[in-house]
Length: 141
Image (cartoon, rainbow, N blue to C red):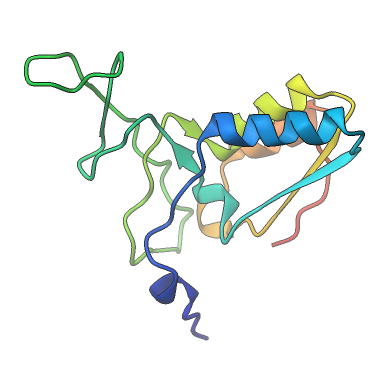
């Protein structure tokens, strides 16, 4: 089979963590009881401050010459038997970390997610699902 989406949507982009946290906080404040996180592939979520194409990030808001920079962690390896035509996203916050932060911050809200891809389904996401009662135990792949 063939999926045209990765070739037509452009490079994957991840929203800033703060914007997602703010949106969920607003929804919770307004009485929403369930939030579904979705994306073309939520497992590829990776957000870091000011990521450059080489994977470097700003530290203390500055990447000027001579300033300290740190290297973002590489994406977890793909599951056996899978390959990718696009480079893996890099970022300090991965999807499992985002989901954990949201679920802990809003225990009154149930969280679901959709469109994970088996090629990069991390074990730590299963840990988040098993440990937090407000993360629904369902997978839509």
